[in-house]
Image (cartoon, rainbow, N blue to C red; front, side):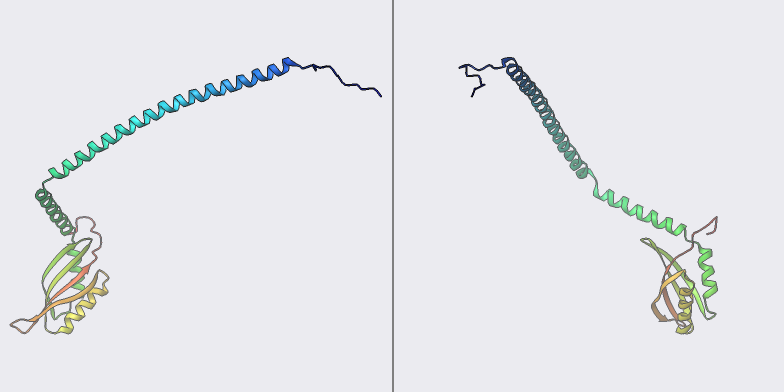
Length: 191
């Protein structure tokens, strides 16, 4: 039997292939190291920039807060309350200006009984709703109740309630009727 192996003390190696692989691996490691080093440097400088920006933003925010406190302390509270009162008065006047007396009295004329007299009307704007107080004189309480029911039936009045009832010297009942009023939108020059 014959042995076919290389029995030399020093076997044959392909040293060029191994050297080439080691050089390629070394170049890859060096390239990755350079890349990581440049990224680390760039990220460190970016982190420094962001910290500086954060510091500047915090300084600016504290200055703005200090300015806001100074403005709040500089506001004259009494002047502000006077302005708020004037604004409420202006809104009330605007609401009263849009009150259509023609439409209102049209409802009254079509619903008031013969034995009831309307002696005073006061429209009031309360928030987003219109309230109307009416002072009435009537011979009987039933006539005033009939009038209140007729007003609610128009759909323009709601929560119609008598609030004060007393007698006059002539023996008539004096009733203050309060009601919510949903006037139709004013068109043209009707007032």
